[in-house]
Image (cartoon, rainbow, N blue to C red; front, side, top):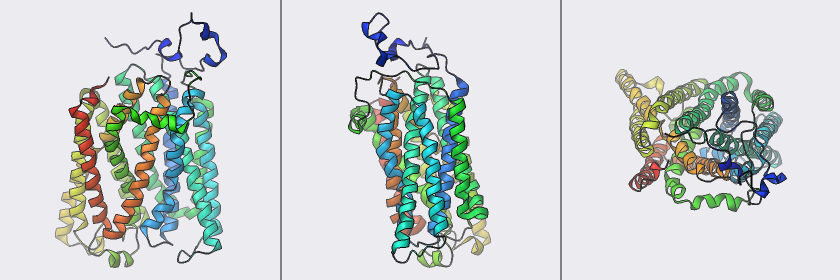
Length: 474
């Protein structure tokens, strides 16, 4: 029978009889006994991540609406917004490796401090230039873009510090228990997606009533996050041998040499690219003002014409269904092969793409829909929801797969889980930039075509993993 308690010797290096065990550099820094997880601390750590995601997404929405009102091109707006991922993908592997050496909590503390500083940069920039002229570049516009760039890079660093440390924390505290790991990893994904789902409609209301003053709300979230980590989140980690090189970016990226990670990378990257494109672009597309949107891409229902609050409420509603789906998958995931769940998720993606493509062609805008088009819309929306529920299983299955791989790499779990943020950052950067270009070229149809390509790439990777039984690693 599998035991849920893992001997501390497996993580802390040599046994007590070794002459090195009394060395200062080998002294463990742990406050949660291995095999006895502090569930309150684990839960609050995940809740801290949710607060960070809420703050980050509100900031994204406020900035997206602010820029969207003054820049016509989706590509330009997206490239400015997605500078966030530059710092995230550069810092995540370093933060993950250093958290293996220094512990998880220092990085959980620094993250909200950087987030608060980012909110201040964005607030100052938007209030200095409430109505920028995006038609030509001058000194004022350059200063504004520098402030925005600085704020977005700091927000990316916030996530880069938080995510690998949180995932490393989860891996530390679920050693040896697949069932507990599935639950906690699913809770992490629920917190991540839940943060986005809650933040999108809430951020829409913040934008409606406060405008760019809403960055003060973002600041409050980061302060609450900081207080939560200071007073309630405990350290989970036993330090690995400090002789090893834990702070090198190259050393962290060497984790990609693991065959199981490398073969999973295309599927993981494709899905994160898809998520990045959808989360970044759909609300922006829905809220393009008419009649300009209808002139740019006519006869597309899901391109332009929606108010900010309606668009964010609709998107948030689909996000809540995604959360519901992950809650259901948490019960099913331990009983199925991980690739089985991933394939089911990709089938759900296909259903979503097909239904949304048909919906997009029902009319010019909501006001002009015929009675038959309204009926077809009501029939197609349940298909989209079913697709979302199926798709929601892909991410917890992916995280559980990575955590299982990381458990075999003692002393480098943070580095392995840091790759989560690296791939997330690269995927969302690619998704937002290339996805933005497909939107400029084809509107909502362009985004759906891009999604089909990503789904096929992901399916090829998952089938390869399944044939070589990489998902059966325990």
